[in-house]
Image (cartoon, rainbow, N blue to C red):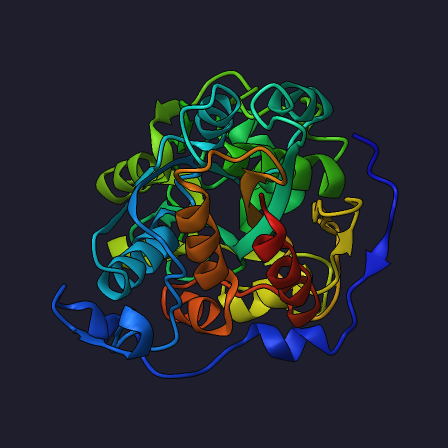
Length: 378
């Protein structure tokens, strides 16, 4: 697949990313919060504008664990609105999701990185007369979580992070860390660095960031979804890494921000070269995502992120999760449910719930493009 077209997102998209609105989580406490509407559809109090459009039966999907918390909200609201529909999303990692998709086992896959050329070629065997396309639906910061008693506001930069995860910096009181944290009482204990054991788009995005922002210190392949460095400890999925960090003093790891929030894990602020270190927040991630460029062509909306940004308040370590589906050749029995679910996920209603769950909605320009594509899936 040739990825040639570059379309800069307008700066005004930043404002569209930080979406305020009704708190959705409080409305998700019951499966019986739906009322019938005209046309036989049902809508939940949490998502009053969901259109079921013939959705029925079971929809299977798998992939990114980084988007699991967002997917859980979408599934909850969609199932409440559409009677008799079951959406089953397995958070097995981006690599596993793409494998299942290209084997025809799931209707769509979630991936924190766009399809590679060889994966696109393989998808054509499943997408009869069509191909797999990347539809960005979820954005947000990859948080660097840590547990270090007495240190509440840890600052690191790309070079130091690269050396920590590459087992080149092994003590918390290393001079490089101390220089970035003057006045902090850093212990001389060993750093316990945790990484993903499964193939992960989150791992790939971390590698892209380190390779771009600290190329002299991170010389591993930035395209790999498997952990490339020696040393450290492995855990399965974002939830596994978050649990490991939460439980181990002197630990550090990486996962989507909602896992840090849910587990009350402290997160690193990144020194990007801007006037002040940048915290891992959805608002700061939005500023970085808004500068992305579309590199896909036609109905493919793969994005190119600027991991080396030094813009004020822009958190550079971000990911965008794509829902990967066939543009043509989807299974007839699941197509109506696939389209209805993805239509909801990218709708204004679906994107609003992301902010409350520590994710960043898609920029207005990108969301509009995806909204135009989903109804054309066939």
